[in-house]
Amino acid sequence: MEMMKQVLTIAGSDSGGGAGIQADIKTFQELGVYSTSVITAVTAQNTQGVTDIYPMARNAVEKQLDAIGTDFQIAALKTGMLFQADIIEATAQGIKKYDWQNVVVDPVMIAKGGASLLQKEAVSALIKHLLPLATIVTPNIPEAEVLSGLEIHDSISRLRVAERIIATGAKAVVIKDGHGTNRFFTEDFYLDYLGDSMIIRSPRIVTNQTHGTGCTFSAALTAELAKGKKMGEALYTAKQFIYAALAHPLHIGSGHGPTNHAAYNKAAVKEVVQLVK
Ligand SMILES: Nc1ncnc2c1ncn2[C@@H]1O[C@H](COP(=O)(O)OP(=O)(O)OP(=O)(O)O)[C@@H](O)[C@H]1O
Ligand SMILES: Cc1ncc(COP(=O)(O)O)c(N)n1
Image (cartoon, rainbow, N blue to C red):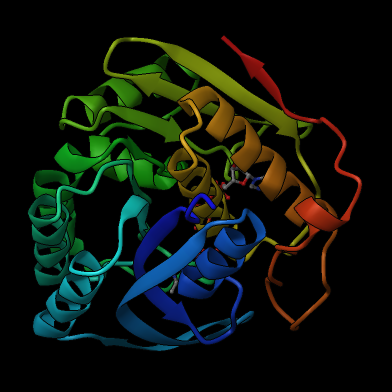
């Protein structure tokens, strides 16, 4: 029997279960890969917001990375909330030490409710230590603007921002469009270091149940890369997965509700995503 693909998420815990480590593990399970995890911080959080953050000591992150690296065959990994510079450095060292490939860096900065999930002074550590190791980095629009130091107004400025992010050493970038302004479509923009680009498009769903969309999308991408899928195919599945999760809301909590991680497998998923080269 072929062994199940093993993946790793290095991220924060969301006590509310919609984002962070919890979203990642649910997504990995749904997509048929075995999930391991390194917890970087514990958040006290629900659908209304984050009330406190307890970062792990660097040593605790290193020990978790070593526990994974000495026993599991990690086919792909993602990073999420890393919070501070020393955790970013430990994460980058672990990735290099164990020569992990298929590295998806979700540069989580601000939670939906406005809480900062990455200290300001840690942004330069992210750019210096982690982006050069990224197979793909998955910023939303505000995160892409912070990473590049440029603003996005239109498709030309979005291309410039993507090029700046590639110049940090990341092999590819996908700028997610959850915060975009088109009322009818979301268009995630992909660019890689070879200059290949594509748009991954889906209808825009009107909903406030969007807690954890970014985590879920990058986890689905990680699972598909672990299975050996090509980048275009992996992005397509990740977009279908998040579309289904948004289209079949759970109505849990009184704020920004979680997405439905089970919907992709349970509901009859229509082929709504378009890849445009
Ligand atoms: N309303 C929506 N309808 C359809 N797709 C959406 C919607 N909102 C987000 N998405 C998709 O979800 C994925 C995650 O994008 P988003 O920009 O929301 O990430 P994010 O801001 O990092 O998420 P988070 O705020 O959870 O960290 C992208 O593929 C995006 O296009
Ligand atoms: C632990 C953790 N990681 C990531 C997010 C981002 O998700 P969102 O922006 O949807 O709140 C979060 N809220 N909490």
